[in-house]
Image 1: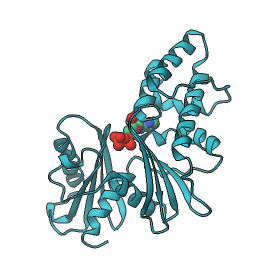
Image 2: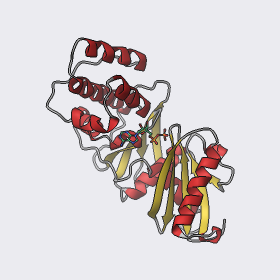
Image 3: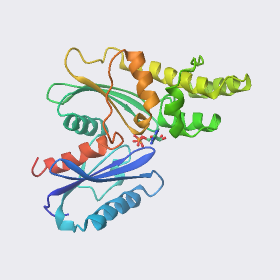
Length: 265
Ligand code: ADP
């Protein structure tokens, strides 16, 4: 790759590979594909697609950085960045320096990252031992309830009385859902209860990691596109939680600006 003014960030996540093309701190292009074997080839297809669509040559690209759990698989990346730092860097920049707490919900894990005033990682906690509350959990719930994931937000935002779902383990939560369905409990109520139980789980992980005084809480990762989850979280935390317009790409963006940082940022 040359010394050009574009940089590329690739986030090789457990569930989706995300790529952004960045110029002068702005996201110019973004796309994702499901994670599958042959991750580097999938990532390079995204890179090639971005360059073709934008009419760019290798000389236009100043750097490529990889992040996410599959980052080491991408040998073409000049830089690898750990996903916590990439998330912090990306969200701090995109929030205009306002973010102090990140709740990242991925396909298979939950993370809470706290930032200092300069945007450096002050602390983080991760739960990757249990799928409850992750994107995969919601996908599984959508299958059990035979309801598209995209309509979860609407059901969760309805006036229905939430059903009680108390299991903290995904396997038990699934059987709880099945037994509620068998008892004839309306799906809306189960979906609402499901969101409340995930919000409680996130609040537990967050614990004392809430910004004191100034500073905002942001939710990112793929599942943050579900408005129902955001609303349930705000109700549980009794505070505003913000979501950026493209919340699944903040980690890839953080990697891209790290690649740019090698040169001109
Ligand atoms: P990872 O980095 O672990 O691969 P992502 O942050 O890319 O995770 O999130 C992937 C998850 O996002 C998937 O489990 C998927 O179900 C979920 N997801 C993607 N788009 C949406 C959406 N519009 N609403 C709810 N969940 C979504």
